[in-house]
Length: 148
Image (tube, rainbow, N blue to C red):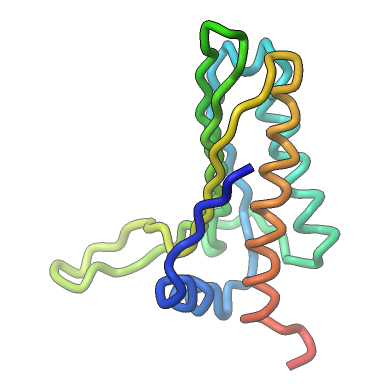
């Protein structure tokens, strides 16, 4: 697994963007039919992400006031039977745009991974998502220490 992390300065800013988030809503983007039929399912990704957040004691929510932990996995089956994948976990928060004062959901934190697995092992990408969610939890808990 190759994880694409932001540059050090950008990483600090992204970590600070997690301060005072009170709840996290998990959103999983639709997967390709090809990925679903090979064993990587939206439901499994959602369950794995929520389980990781619960285990790490990051507050789950369901309101529009929370930030979205957005999960996107793109796959491509090559002619050799290998699946290339791009897995991305990001945090989307409501922000006010400075120029026109419009409100929009924007990415304020993200991590991604790129790799390849055999067709029979595509469900292993779930573990990649868990690792990325764990990295989010590390940053979230650093900025929202419950002991403060």
